[in-house]
Image (cartoon, rainbow, N blue to C red; front, top):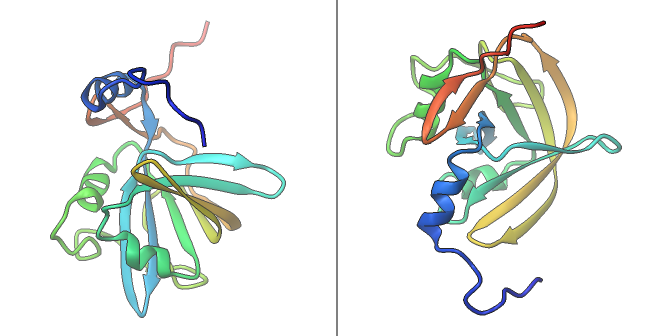
Amino acid sequence: MTETLPGRAVGAEHFRRALAVHASGVVVITAQTDGVPVGLTATSFSSVSLEPPLVSFYVDRSSTTWPLLGAADHFAVNILASDQAEVAARFARKGVDRFAPPTRWRPGPLGAPLLRDVSAHLVCLPYERAEVGDHILVVGLVAEVETHSTGRPLLYHQGRFGRFLPHPED
């Protein structure tokens, strides 16, 4: 563990404002525990390794969804398309049935819910977990991939969901 020099760490709000200028992709992590589908929105998703194929995301330790999601024997990463901002917002909300209509989903090959109309699904087996600050780092071994669309991704920037606009080709 790295120690921080006294007085050197920035404040949480200042740090949050700085991170807001970084655009990130948006995914919904889904699983099923005891027949109950669970899911949450994550903007911290990234690839980790090609050999073996590993991906990761972070979840807040205070998440009420994490205990059920973390107990599952596998999970799915649903990579959202640019027109799925409402899906991302729904899975980020508390106190709603995230899988009720208008959410469209189907059970995956191992049982984890797979959201419809996403760009891709990655079905993952738990590989590693670590507590890092106020979050839990979750690493998954990718067991199955389905790519549905190579269209534009949904992005998260400045506290809002948005779309990617590519530069015109020269």
